[in-house]
Image (cartoon, rainbow, N blue to C red; front, side, top):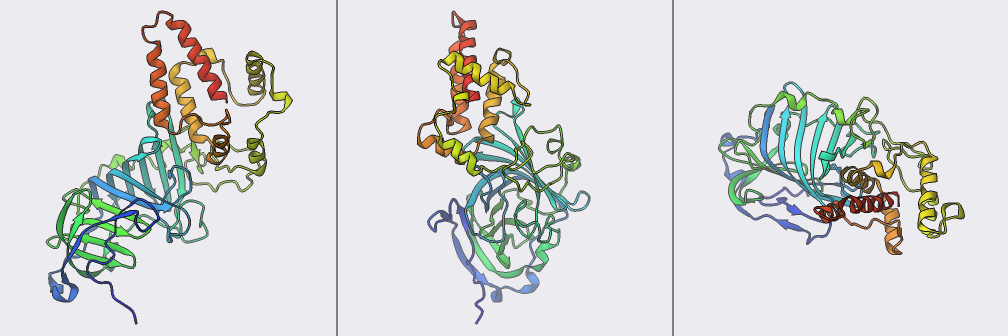
Length: 404
C-alpha cells in the first residue's frame, strides 16, 4: 500500500555531511492538510519566465569530482562521496529571450572565498571561478555537459538536461499548510507545501511566491528576495557572453574540459599520456611510484645547493614550457604562479608527500595560508635598511619553493 506524503514531512534543512547528525533540520508545525484547504483558493508556486533574485542562498549537494568541490552539480542519486557546498549571491533567469539560468555567487571554501559565475544554457553549463586573488589573473573555467541528472562526463550517454522550464511548477501537488522555519531569513513563515517526486517547494499562500525549495541529495535553496521568482526584470548583459570568454582559447589559463570555442569536450581517456591544462588528468601507477621514491635518480641530484639549482634549471629549460629567470619575477607574479600550481596539484600525490614530510609537499594547507605567508614576507622588506638585498633573497627562496 502506497503511503502519501504528510504535512511537515520531507522538509530538510542545512546539511554539512553524509551522516544523519550532519544536518540542521528546520522547524515545522502543521497547520492544515490538503483536505482542509479549499482547492479553489490555492495558488501554485510561481516560476515566471524572467526574474532576478538579488538575495539568494543555497547548499548544493552533488558528487565529489574534485578535492575542493568546484565541479559539483546535483545528481540523481546519493551514492559515493558527496559535496555540501554553501553559496550565496544573485540568481537570474531568462526563459523569454536567452533561455538560460545564471548564478553569480560567493562561495566560502578551504581555499578562501571564491567568486563563481554559473551559466546554464542549452545542454551546456559553464562554471567560472575567480580565486581569492583573481586580480592576479587566476581564474578557472569548467565546461560541462549536463545529462541524466548528473554532471560533466559521468553519464553523457543519457538525455541532455536543459535549464528548468518556466512552467515546471504546474506539475506539483499540494501537501498542506505549515509554519516553517526558513533558513537565512531566520524566521517562521506560514507557507504552502508543494511536492513532485523528491522535489519540495514552499510558497506564500496569498500569491504563490516561492520562498524555499528542498530536494534530498540535491540541496536547499532559499529566496530571501520578497518577490521570489515572480515576474521581474533581467539585465540582458548577464547573458551576452555565451560561452563565457574565460572558457574559450586565450581566456582563463585553467580551462577544464573546454574546447577552443568554449564548449564542453570529453576528457581524454588515456591517463598515461601527457596532461595539458585543458584536460582532466589522473595520477598513474608510475606517478605514485615516483612520488614514493624520495631519493632522486643521479641525473636529478647534485652535491651542493648551488649545483642542485643548476641541475633543476637544466631540466626546466630542456622542455617546451616557457621559462624565464627568477630575477625577472616580482613578488606578485611568484605569488600568482605558486597559487596556480597549488590549484593544479594532485591531492593524492600530495598526501604521499605529506605522510613522510617530503620536501615536495605543499607547505601551506590552504590558499589563505599562502596569502598569510606572502603578506608576512612582504612586510619584512618594507623599510628594511637592506631592502633590495632582502627582496632578492626572498624572491630566490620563493623561486626554489615554486620549482619544488
